[in-house]
Image 1 (cartoon, helix red, strand yellow):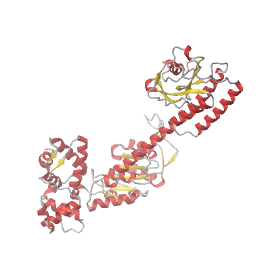
Image 2: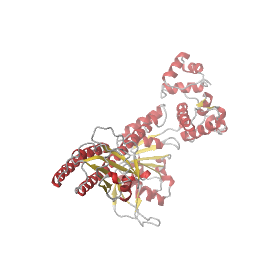
Image 3: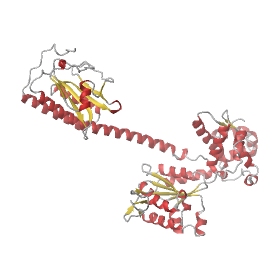
Length: 525
């Protein structure tokens, strides 16, 4: 039995008037603490200190519900005598001890003397067993018990226990609001922190330098155009064959624009029939058609404030082109089955692998819609037109596969030469698939010509007409930068540096220096 305070002279009893004055002062102080609270643990400690020093309620304890274990976790204690009381992992399960009983039935428990209650556990070894004890529930707005507030009056049981209990219930009510608000604030701060971290990751992932790999002049021109247009709200039309990375460029434009914090919504126009495409883009009202059991927002509304990426825009029908033209011109539309005009503020980035100018001439694509989309055009060259990027691109894709397969993957120079002699009709997407298949075929992680041949690529390289007629890169072409010339010479020389140096009119030392400074990865076969 802990008689820690019983050796001291008992405090003088107080009158009802004196008690009322103390409790009013305590409530005023607690209200000020709550108004300025920004940390839940600190707030609990300060509240318990006021209970001890002003209201005469010592050894205060606040426990907050732990739903995972159907228990209350002791969150704060104030002993008032300078002892370092460690809360640790003290828990009271529902119905266990006095605290657990309050948690289970939600009613206050008042003990005239602790020693008279055999269920009092005193796990914290704080209390004077000859003094009273008051414990009250902390409820939320829905009446659910979220915790317990308990303390021990500093005077023996008297006729003021009821007043002290009502005072404790008042403090518990104030604490319930504090717990709810502070938990929401801290949760909001945690969510905001996670959001900011995700934004940093997204910016890093979708930075231009981390998107489509390429140092050729044609790709540098693409990156420069994307950087410039990202700062503005102009509509962008991205052109290029399938697999060239049109969606990656669109993502980079959005995440490097002032709209980066707003939604980025994507839709493949070729993936849906026209009847569903209208509902998908504009949304629909309840009962607009069979199966429309509730109102639904379309992609335009979902992208409000942000960017809407319309892939394969060249596949939409002439009838739907007219509907799309209106929203591009006016920025407004109606949901399917609705009459209310909805205005949206967003940026459109469209992409297609079709030649829209030729489609306009054939009458298959509206001329006015084409000029609405063609404010800023970015054309991504196919992989066969930037073969100097293949070595670096292959290394990048292989590093991603290394992470995925949790092993080191390497690519031999003969394999790089083999990759560079293929036309890649599927562009970067086909290259990535080829490397993944080849890596699976490689037991030791070294992707060589044999592994690539097992993917079926070798069967297509020789007979493919485009390969027979592909001339070697003109090393005197003024449009080629130095890096492209060095890679082209290495390719023509079978990746033998001495031969490549002779093609460029350099010494072996000079080409070795350029390979190093231009960051060209050349390994011995």
